[in-house]
Amino acid sequence: MSVIIAIDGPSGSGKSSTSRLVARRLGARYVDTGAMYRAITWWMLREGIDPDDTAAVAARCAEPIIDLRDDPADPHISVDGHDVSVDIRGPGVGAAVSRISAVPQVRSRLVAIQRDLVEAARQRGDGVVMEGRDIGTVVLPDADLKVFLTADAGARAERRAREQVGDDHVDRDMIRATEEHLLSRDAIDSTRAVSPLQAADDAIRIDGTHLTLDEVADAILAAVPDQRA
Ligand code: DC
Image 1 (cartoon, protein in one colour):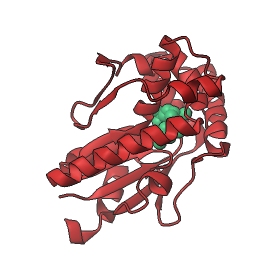
Image 2: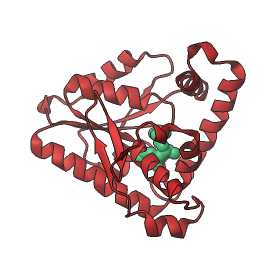
Image 3: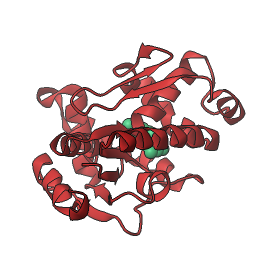
Image 4: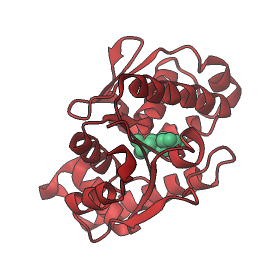
């Protein structure tokens, strides 16, 4: 099945787990575009480039070789041959990624790679589930299905905090701090000049606050258009 699905939404909305599950259930490829913005941020930091130096970020962003493995059972990302799948989740990258991803040259380079991945999958007859912030609006405006996944800020913060420290160590203060961090990232992602986080007009909106992962995936799978199934 070569269906192309775009899933957008804010941090902590459960996009990654949902997108992977949907891709696995469909036998499709899975592309986490946030991992690509994180990977380029990791490289900028390693090169000692100041994330606020927009001119330097723009001038150097074509250099790193970014390679994404789009298997939903075992996704990986590497930069110049180094597997950075774990390192890109660290706090240094998390603190800088919104600034790096606001640079237009970074976005146009990664959008080109994202479209190439879809084209390669299409040629093999594979479907793709691609998740991010601007997939339905900019990267894949002709996707077969567009989903905008949201959840309450409190629910998103709790999910992120549990992921980071484990269920036994999470407490109210940590959830509150995580919520503040998420809200500030959302504000940057939603108000930047290029490709801000927003739902496409033709996206279906799913609020996952009170739904399980399986329920969200079921709602998406139920909306996959029949003609490609
Ligand atoms: O989904 P995530 O938290 O891993 O995304 C990391 C950052 O990358 C986040 O600040 C938003 C940005 N991003 C983006 O600007 N466009 C995308 N398509 C995906 C992520």
